[in-house]
Amino acid sequence: MPIHDQGYRRYTGTRTPRGRAWAVITTAGLRTFFGKRAFLALLLLSWLPFVVRTVQIYAAANFPQMAFIAPTAETFRQFLNQQDPFVFFVSVYVGAGLIANDRRANALQIYLSKPLTRGEYVLGKMAILMTFLLMVTWLPAMVLLLVQVSFAGSLTFLKSNLHLVPAITLLSFVEATMVSTAMLALSSLSNNSRFVGILYAGLIFFSDALFVVLRAVTGESRLSWVSFGNNLAQIGDAMFRVPLRYSTPWPVSLLMVVALVVTSGLILKKRVRGVEVIA
Amino acid sequence: MADTAAPVVTLEGVTVVYAKHAALSNVTASFPAGAVGLLGPNGAGKSTLIKTLLGFVVPERGRMQVLGLDVARAPLDIRARVGYVPESDAHIPGMNAVSFVAYCGELGGLPRVDAVQRAHEVLFYVGLGEARYRNVETYSAGMKQRIKLAQALVHDPDLLFLDEPTNGMDPRGRDEMLELVHDLGHDKGVNIILSSHLLPDVEYACDHVVVIDKGKVAAAGPIAALKQPRGRVFELRVKPPAGGLEPVLARLTAAGLECHATDEDVMRVFVPGDGGAREVFAIAASAGAQVRHLRPSVPTLEDVFAQAVGEE
Image (cartoon, rainbow over all chains, first blue to last red; front, side, top):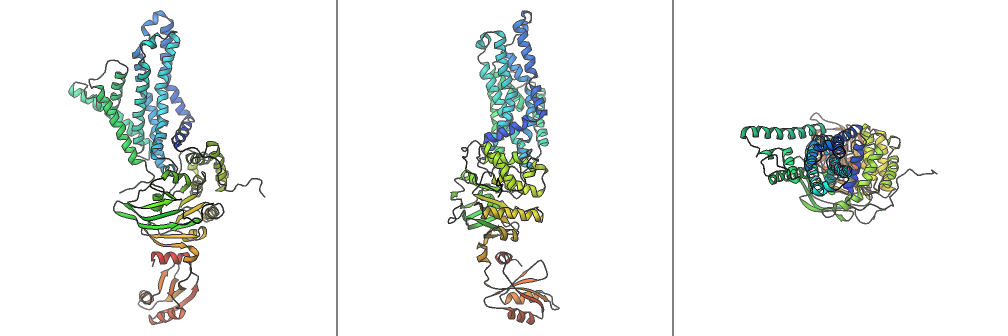
């Protein structure tokens, strides 16, 4: 008689409540990417501007002759602008394969045969990318604010710029949401993550180039809404209460961001299915 | 153990249409508890039926119940209690077998610690114990079938949908897979619906069968009962006359006998009622054919299948 029967046994333990499957997907995804050295290097690199800004704040706080580089509200706006290239690279690295790889491996029918909805699946995948994007935008910006407070030794700057906390938070979340939904939608369109990455880059650069051409033709920046990046920049400027860089009203830019998120949602609703029916 | 009285799956007038093609046409069927084979030729609608029961495909018409739950109203409750082995290769990319199966266990509602523990157990059960730390993408076709079974079992389902689980397996692997399915269905209290176009697979692993053809149920019932002769079955080989075999077949069919070709040059002839060998000899002689081989035979599931789908 075997000491331990390696046959199949029925499960007698307790099960977790329904509705947490998205967290399982997110946790597994985060674990996977944290295990990749190249990605960790990218994350570390994305904090380089933070280190530079920390040195700037330290110098301004400790050396009177360096007061001219003292941080202002605009410093934090610029900091988030500087993070945009890292947002792009993290989005491509993490996001391109989130659904495309599952489609390639026919994993969707595995996922959707478990007790989770399509919405939970998308939420779980989206939370992976959003977490990393917030680690590149919201987290360093908020830590930078704390660094400013600690180096200055007073809350004067924070009190006079209290809008920075909601502005950093809101802009970071709007950016992460827009980028995540758009990237997931693109990822759901293909089985090839490289193709998705190229497609995403193409859309970003094409929309920027289109705006440059239109501005050159019309001589004004009212058509900045054609560029995904410009819409975010415009909304960000409004949130940080700095002068708007384009003549497009910021609600128009906001509307474009909402339209992009809704369109992405519709694509995901159509593409994330347990079975692909070709009519 | 599952309730042996109530059926585990019922379908009432289910119709599924892809574009203009009816994949399932007004299907009404009942799958009893235990191991049930879903038998049919390729394209009959077997996979569509399973995907409809899982909620992947929404039917145009009809009602379905799985384990007493309405598919339209409680799909998540159903999926928490069923396991699904898809026909095509399917895995979560970038994971080894333990991570993959444990992950599926967590998605199925197990706490992480239990999911990992059961992943190890289930992988040993399906015969992948030694390969459980290998990336699933490096697995052979047979191993991929086993890992699909493991991910479907890890959360301990009451009902297991197996869609062509022996595809791509070598003879030994196929036998082992069928042994697992038989064990699950007969000794472990897991209800099984085994979709296959391979008659021996269904005959070995299942007690009941639902034969589906062109989107309709062609026959259903216990395999033993379906195999009961409603007449007599003979293996027949003839030397055809100068006009070829067609006139002989036409005479046999006209006399009410059913003829089905086999892989060899022997055909299986069903003689309804009390008819016997003399009747076959007489018809062959009248058609000018020489009977070279005539032997009484035991009806098989293949005969049931051939009769049900009207195979020539």
